[in-house]
Image 1 (cartoon, rainbow, N blue to C red):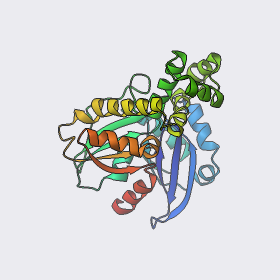
Image 2 (image 1 turned 60 degrees about the vertical axis):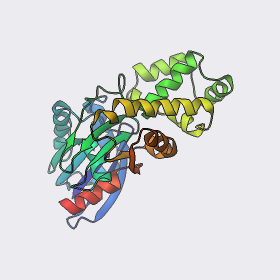
Image 3 (image 1 turned 120 degrees about the horizontal axis):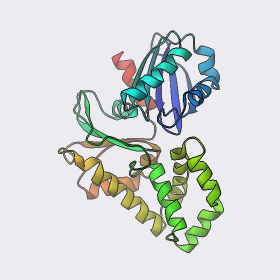
Image 4 (image 1 turned 180 degrees about the horizontal axis):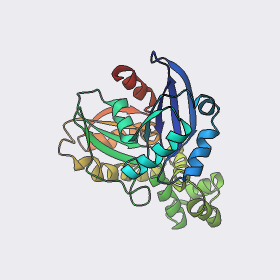
Length: 283
């Protein structure tokens, strides 16, 4: 049995294939980012999934593409966990940017590939390998244009009284914005980046409000400036995206890209289907 996994900060999609590369099952766990989770939390999330627990002895190959897997230290950390949990499996761990590439860009084709979900990232793919100009330092200093980026912006603007009063009342009615609750989730609970990203739903649902329009536009422009425009061929090749923010704010994202003379490519909410197709063709 082969397991193919796309793991973001919020959730992980798992698809199992048999020897004929036919799908056996699809399942989900919470995100398994090694940068923000302990070994114990990751092991619990694996063990609490019925399909994974039932089939752990049957897995021979595991292809894991995950947020927070950009360094050798994090890859080794996860491989050690997988070795114990899937004892017969040969595990390959790569950062989630590879999943985005395989899901949106044909082998041999050039493109800029971006992630805009709970977090954000960007690379250039020359048809064979990826190149990154920006090394991610995680959600606190980076992740422009992402769910947690927008969530942080909303909370800051609310507390600095920069959200228009009509929208602020609505925001307060939909979320628990008590300072102690926010600080508890940011500094004492797991996955503070995922917690911040939950506030992005408000921005999406109210995207026609002038304030929200401005926040979205500035956030996407900041992503373009800091990530995409780092590449010399930025305006010459398609710019592809995966992630919920790119999907739900497709219209707004497209407008910013076109304003910057960028070629809008593929936009997919979840890369897992394209990732499976890639493995079915190449393995």
